[in-house]
Image 1: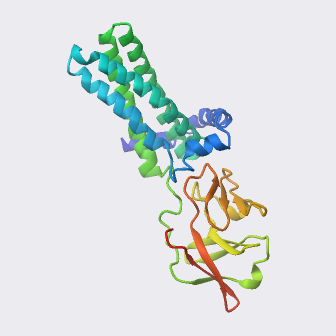
Image 2 (image 1 turned 60 degrees about the vertical axis):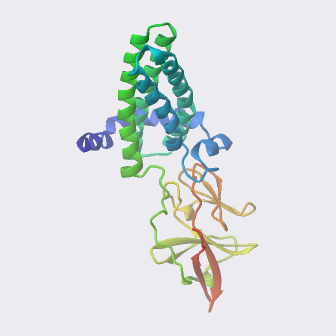
Image 3 (image 1 turned 90 degrees about the vertical axis):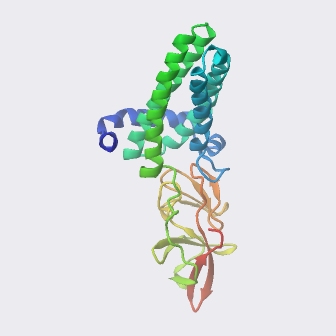
Length: 283
């Protein structure tokens, strides 16, 4: 299986279809409240992996009941239908995440999505057959759908645990617990963001009306450089140049997605002509 995954990751012929898909997906799920909802801004992490549990639970339960004979056919039909309904918001959340992916992640994500569509098609056919009284065909289509579901689920696991899709890009960075000098005070002018270095971490410093603010410069969503983004002085925010996630410069809070995890926030002080930072507890 690892060899197959590597071939999918390197399959450049998928890029044309992926590019077309992301253009359509970006129009279906543009930046705004709906995308914030689907990408998990309100939750603090991506929504899609959590939603997949519902469809998987309904469909695997239907398969299990099919093993116990005709007595449970009506219940299996109901569970199949509930799985179809739960797959709709799950697919929407997955699409909202996928449109911001690139390279190997986007290619694997495309194949993962195709597998999920195939599974949904098979389960939809199963539900229709069951409604018409053809339980045998319904059971066969359920087994086919389960095969597609397991295959696409394997790809989903690869996306999450090997490629790191949806993982907070700051999750494994070592942040300074002690006061650490990062910049000369005279180098930070009001309204102009500047990067300081605290150990292995780039810190974005900004002097606004409320004093000196400091957050991690690496976007939690895909690792974009926030210092190259757009500063909104009135809103006290920065917009990532890669996928337009917007963060509060002082608190690191996500204002708009697709990011779901906030930026690590630092306390800042001036000491001996230098700006020093340390991690805010709880980051």
